[in-house]
Image (cartoon, rainbow, N blue to C red; front, side):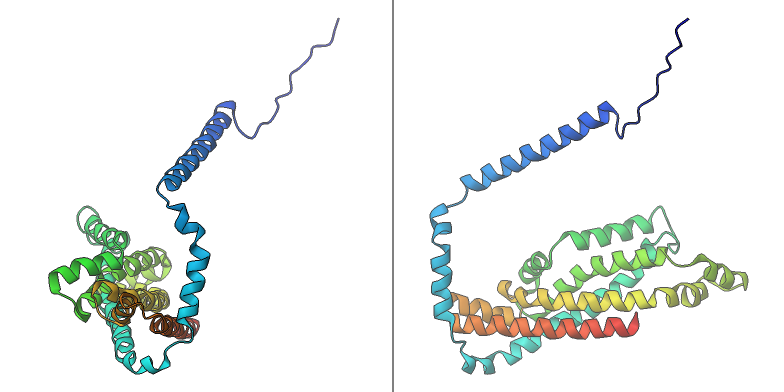
Length: 270
C-alpha cells in the first residue's frame, strides 16, 4: 500500500489577488508619471531651458558685486519684516491655543459641535498659503504691514493648532486622574494637569513657527504686504541686480540668525 502523500502548505507573503493589485497600482503610478511628463513637455518652451545656463551666468555677472551703499535703505524694511513675523506669530498662537483645546478629544467640551468646528478652522488655515492670505487681505485692507501680520497669523493658526492639539491628546492620563480625584474643577485640571505637560511642546512649536514665519514674511512684500519683499520687488522691476543680490544675502543672513536663535530656545526649553 503506497504511503499517503500529505500536501505541505507553502507560505506566501501576499495572496495572488493582493499581488495583482500591487502590480496594478505600480502600473497606474508609472502611467501617471508618463502622463505628467508629457504634459510638462508640451507646455515647456525648451529654447528657454537650453539658454538657462547662459541667462543665469549673465544675471550673476550683472549682480556682482552687491551694491553695499543700498544697505541704508534696507534696515527699515528688514525691521518691518521681523515685526510682521513676530506679531503674526503672537497673534496666530494666541488664536490657536483655544482652538487646540477645543479640537483635542480629551479637552473639548463638545465632540459633536465645537470639536468639528475647531478642526475645520485648523484645516482651513493650513490649506491656504500665507501668500494667498496676503493677496486676499491686501485686497480688503490695502497694502501695508497689517495685511502681512494678519496673513502670517491666519497661516500660523493651523500649524500651531494642529501640533498643539496632538500634544494635548498625548498627555499622561495618570496626572489628570490624580488631580481629578482631589475634586479639582475643569479649569484647575487644565491648568495643573494638562498645561504643564504640553508647555514644552507649546514653546517649541511657537518658536519653530516664528522661524518659519520669518522666511515667509520676506516674500509677502511681493504682493504689497510690507517688509523687505517690497524692496525686492522694486529692485526686480528696475532690473537692479546688484540690489537684488544684496537683498537676497540680507534675507539669507536673517534666516540663518533666526534659525540659530530658535534652535537655542528649543534646546533650552525642551
